[in-house]
Length: 393
Image (cartoon, helix red, strand yellow):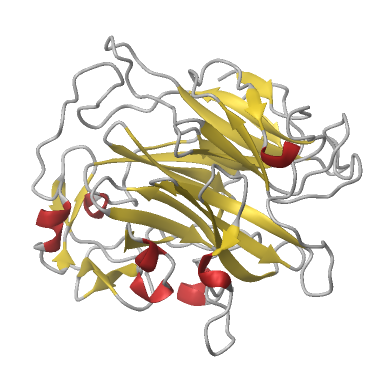
């Protein structure tokens, strides 16, 4: 599992020390990378220079993920995406968690933090010009009663760090966990791909365990991973007909990659195949699958299970480290083992091979019963499980 490249320092974006570099596909097909607290300079260290910024966006062409990422541009030459002062008495910084492109619009989810692990609210921002200019959704972070539109207390605090991806069926699917205390399980939501719905928290459907089965409904979402799971950063991507859920398992101190196939409602994340390609250690052994002070761990959206010629594809992951000394403080590109595909894939330049599934379209989904059993693993066997993983029957 070789480390391919340190992504910072970078002249593009004026990045000395920084982290995250969350990779997402932009409306024009290029790959955007969202950076957290960023300092200028030529050293990958906390406070390596002046000009504290977050979030920052850099952009690269969509090239094979097994080759080094090369940034080609950054809106405003690495400027903070919107203006605000850090350490302003209300909060210290604003950190990005993920972005999703819908048509020509990029939606960005951020956490407003008053010290690491103390998130006071979340916000949704958008750009209609490839990241050059940004606007807060609906013009305010508040509801009419003055409370946060996107509260960090919702669903047990599990809608704080959020990752989202289009399902190809008219919905965006969202997985969330807690903030940087990294002490929460995960929950899931969906929302229709319309501006009105995306920006309205009341339009989001929660994935709930009710009356012995899972279903979409209103109210709090339930935990989707085994009891006791404690997550950090997370990333959900749809790759070649598969759902790939990756991130940092803080409880186990390692990266994880979970893979599901077909409609996301039929995936049992308790039993979905999982790999752990990078492990953390306070004192690393020097091998590339051990990374000191590990976090981040986002699967790159251009990863592939299979190439157009049928050969095994390549997966890459963006991993961060923050040394106790503050140096290094950086994001890195890793090549990781390619997980096994669970079903037919579609590859660029090859004929699309679609899996036959009765819930593959938005129309058939709309007519599906509210209560849904789960199909687990590669075989799609129907099973019913409680949020803690136990079976009611």
